[in-house]
Image 1 (cartoon, rainbow, N blue to C red):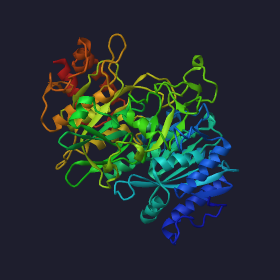
Image 2 (cartoon, helix red, strand yellow):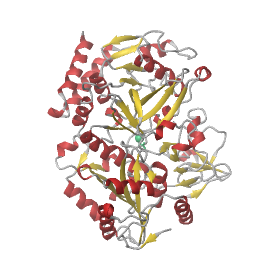
Image 3 (spheres, rainbow, N blue to C red):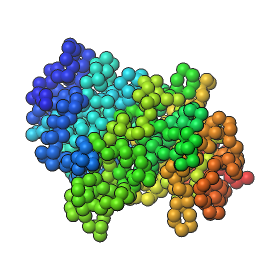
Image 4 (tube, rainbow, N blue to C red):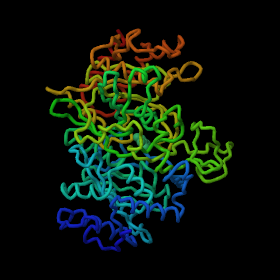
Length: 601
Ligand code: OXD
Ligand code: MN
């Protein structure tokens, strides 16, 4: 490995370069080294040889455990500190000069206080450790929609994960050298002490400082910190959108592919939807789903007025529990090799295991490394994860590497709503669609620390990720509706509606294709709908339910419209918009009031 002790005068992998366009990067690396005082500095080139050395080192020190190499070649298990298993929203800050720019949706600290707090934590924190410098690109290297960053970390586990999740190493550094603009992310696992853990963002400086956690969403800085919080801020000033959305291509039997971007809160099935396998009858007709991305979508208007999207990530950091050959065969196929599993259980023959895997095997060791005892909790942590290259997904779309991105025909919003919200409805127009996104609600999940199953507003699934005031963010969304724009239709779905006995009414998974089919028919003007104050619901018989066993309660609740329930919901949406004060766009308040009034009539 090419470790150079405190020699930061030139990056070892930018051979042949005079380094002048990397002066800012070199100066920052030197400044960080002076603060954190590592024993060595390693510039990551992203090569196989580098990865092999890091893996071997992590095996030696116990950071990684080799899994069964016959069944899962190239795969490893990482057991995190038991207090470091999820995102920490209460410790995540957006540091803007004016507090109002961060908005009531973010925890705020002034940039000066934020830097002071973090620099005190970083002071000397890498003594005895190697500091890794990771140049990375979010999105295809050649895409004008992509943006670069550099993460400095003292965690080889972070390096190995960033190599899977981003285009990392020499090609990214070459782009940074061309552009000389990059997001700066400084990370240290510190002592993994929850009392000394903060994830701070300085969007005005395109800077991230994260201390005290090794967990994906807190530590792989390309993901939530850069690709959502910093990027959303950058996107606002540059006229694009950085969203918490999967991207899929839906190919019909005629060979025509429509791309759909869908926002769901964390751990609400984005990976499953992005990798959906159509039901038997649809497959026989030639329907296919192509996976472009499962978590993040960057999109901007193209010359033809349509929105074009890229997946800025190169891999999947998916939730393991519940992933099975039935729920998501594509995900399961993707993670048979070259996968890093974090906090799953292990079987007697050293295979990864989690609740819902349903492969007839049993765990003997739980995620903490203890003998499994069902009385003491699940074998896999509910937020246990797999990290794997998107290229291993059997349905990975060749268009995912297209520098121009894919044209989006439909945008979908959805959350976990056990009551009130029907299976699908369509917004009347863009402004209504923005309100539908802004009003999104969902039950919390294990992806963040705190109570699970608590209903909260999670606008556009961006509550934990929007790097600025939601009122300004909604305004930015509204601004896309201008002359010449050919915007996607907007829909809302709810796969999680429950019956009186508490069971899910909709079968979900592959059957969700029926809903996507209706959406694309609507886009093409080929399917009928019933207009209600909340939007267009599928007209009777227009959404194909052939072969789906739905009782009377299912039909009524999934396709019905409960006026009294929606009146209460719209009153609550009005109160929510008011929390943002005068910054909330009037157009959105007018839309809420128009619908609230229609619900009274
Ligand atoms: C994720 C999340 O890891 O949303 O994607 O928490
Ligand atoms: Mn996510």
